[in-house]
Length: 335
Image (cartoon, rainbow, N blue to C red; front, side, top):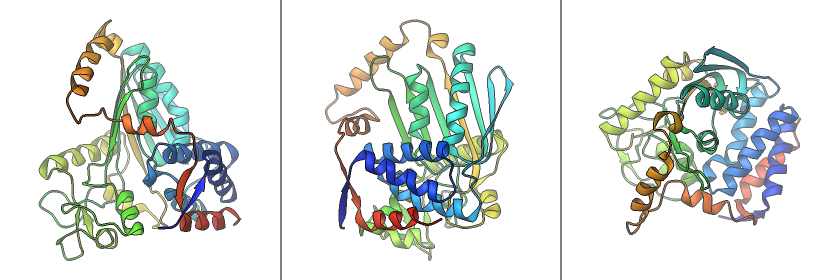
């Protein structure tokens, strides 16, 4: 694979220029470009520039409104609802998360229910932001069907990621972000592009047989849930939380309504924030640190999010797939 070296500022500028050229206003382009740059900075390659052509596809088809603004509604002291109005999810989160954080600090627990937004980014940015405010966070969202329930060979679930973050005052939060599929589809697509095999158990081909070829999975095959029936049950939970509970689509309903332009479909997101100060009382952080220190004392163990936080300390340039950069540069010049 041929790569080119881009500084973080060059990644940011390229992403923003491309979004502006394809229907985003300055605020939306700035928010999404910053998120894309941070994904590249932190080593989350399947959610960085790799996603930009798909965002452009959704903008160009008119499915995504790059100039719309979400509506924030306070349903009760602890329930915040945001109507996405076909905005990109980072814009929706930019408006909704401050309200969630405020409500959770006031009431101990709060929920943010998001409708009708287009989410295709990583989920750690939203849970990490909540944790940096001193709150425990959990988030999940569904997608179009790509994962077969345990025992099946046809897709029903989305890759249905979940993210959890635990606050650590004066330290970086403990954060994980994972698909309930055996592997995120973006990672399968990156493996296909770069010619890598994937582990057996990642997915099935068109004939319903296990394969290590990411192309067979991405092109007409199906992903499997991680952990068999256990992962399948968690994926089902995400469908219910990010669909029925927030008043949005299940993955199969999302697919039925989508225009199949290749861009992220419209859907919902569920985010929960909890104040450990109000639930556990003072000293909660010191108690948690005893556990984390015990965990880290075990050989070979690192806390979730540590590698990403270490990556972001490197402010130097990043090596980006050259073909991808060229494709994006072409998109950035089209009106």
